[in-house]
Length: 110
Image 1 (tube, helix red, strand yellow):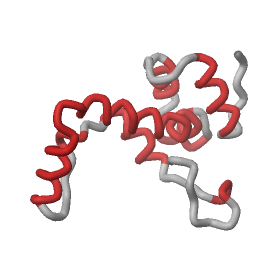
Image 2 (cartoon, one colour; image 1 turned 135 degrees about the vertical axis):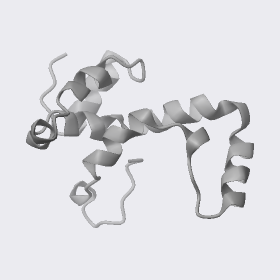
Image 3 (cartoon, one colour; image 1 turned 180 degrees about the vertical axis):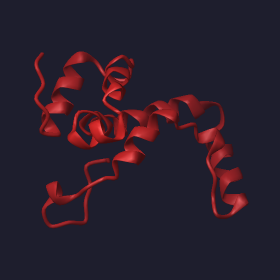
Image 4 (cartoon, one colour; image 1 turned 30 degrees about the vertical axis):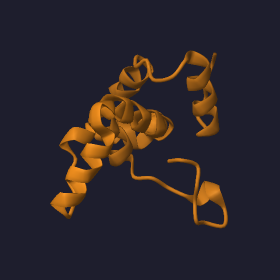
């Protein structure tokens, strides 16, 4: 999601669509950890910035979620309406949306 990849060809990376689409319901305050102490410490460090962290994470997942929302897979999963929801968020400007859609290989018309 952050553009990093351990693959020789970065574009060979693939991210599960269900995860990117679910990211828009993400709330770090309800996250789980395998060790309860880790969860408590993470939330302590986040403090009053939980919504800012949520927004940051949603922005990172936006391109993948938007791409998946317009694919044939989205039609099979019934998630095409998700694109409208993604476009209606205030996470990205119109220019950022177009740029990120183009980076994902989507057809985007500004």
